[in-house]
Image: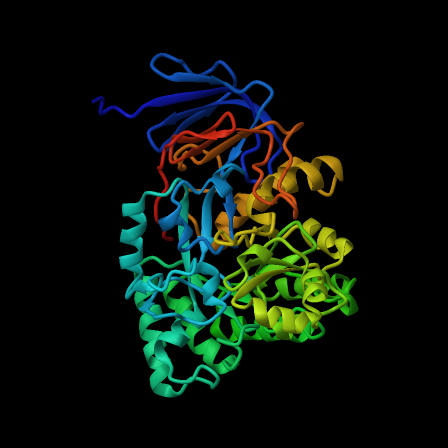
Length: 482
Ligand code: ZN
């Protein structure tokens, strides 16, 4: 055994450091889990270091996937290839009001099923620290930071989640959320769109979100409405964060449903005007289709819907709901009912809105990938290379420096991830080496689990986890707190 930290010298790469600064040629020296030095090419003595020639490659911070449902995935499939293969080194989980902790819940209803992998024992962690210990024991290949979800808190504390919480229930939720923040949670999330969360009014949300003001952390919301009432929901979200005096992130911002296509022309100016008054961030994924549970109430016959998983009819995964309904000689709603519990992919957005939202400088990138689906939305395997290949290189929506910033430095600062998301001396050695001329997603709606092309190497806490198109076996990720 050699106890001195291994040194790796990444030589002559094009450094895009995650701050938005212009790229420059540089050598980057790693020692153990940290970045030890950055200098002009040739200025660092190589001595004991293993040298990696990065000529022609871009060297950037590992990507931070700010919108995930990877709570359980890091435990049950710790190789995390879907993310590592894209250059992702840290994920933020617990989004949309759904988190794996706190509380021991038996067979919780949808949408908690999105992270349950059909395993009734998934929600077994009384405190976040119990989950953090399970993450350390599982040793995933990437880092994970956690938000605490309102639906999880409600199901654990309330007799009837169809109502607003009463005082005793609210006290119980506040106690649990405060304990999770002490255990390292980086924020609190709602999914007011979902039936498990929808009965909560602003007062209930503020009473929880305000705990972040003292303890630190960000309020993240899958809003009540991303369809006809998207502007009302933005106002509600901003007012909630303002009353609680906390920063807010609007999740997977979109204008959903054909009637609302084009309305990012209204939502982005509202977000921009509000940013002058309070701390507002947002994330988006680079596709015009969303994905969540398949709910008969959400079926819009005008919008194509794909089945991403089904417990009753697993063989229907990957098929169009309209085709299934035709075969069964029933409505799409009835087909969705028969398929449930199930997941759906909804082609509910306008490409022009997607581009406008992605191009908006404050927008961060989050995949919203669903890791347990049998036929997942391709965003699970493709998001980050798609932003760099399709939207940056091919369409010129933003510069490479800005694209990387949206995936790294901006994300780390919004979510309070210390020493990550930037390449600088002393920061963690989470890095990705990629070919900016080649990088592209290959996952499609037909073949959603094809790894991306153009990723050369991915370092997580100083260890190479992905190289030459394959997992190295290294599992150097950890539970990350503020
Ligand atoms: Zn969501």
